[in-house]
Image (tube, rainbow, N blue to C red; front, side, top):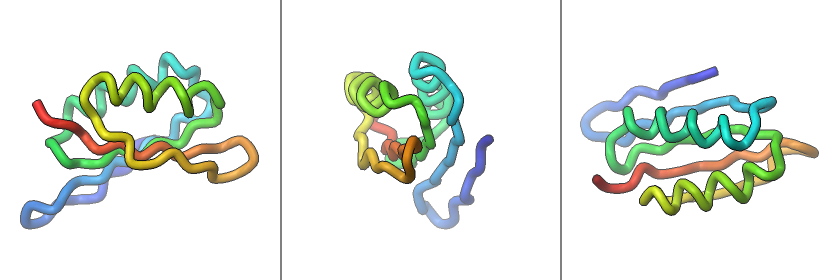
Length: 88
């Protein structure tokens, strides 16, 4: 599931992806594709339920030049990862 909040007058865009049920490797690929379509400073928020994604995804996205804003536990087995697109 993908939701976009619009941008007006130079505001940053925020995209939400619900990737619960997806393996960590698939989550990374989906994040990478979504980030490619965003502008620097835009934010991608994802929901995951794979505990390994809470470590693997931030590490990989940092290596790609993006800033991980937060990794927050949202429930018993759900985490939110917020990433700001880095520069190109």
